Length: 55
Figure (tube, helix red, strand yellow):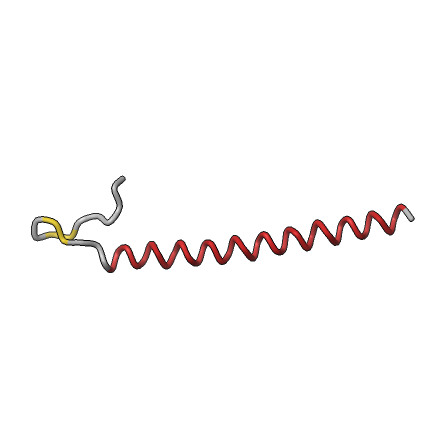
């Protein structure tokens, strides 16, 4: 019974880690798209291209 619980716990941890990594990949892709869009649509300030972020 112990090894069965250990295997089930391991499978649950690996499934959770896989789901979390997949979610992190989607978040990374969304952030990359927003970052690239920021470079394309940044406003021009004083006749030159300005920064789209404040820092």
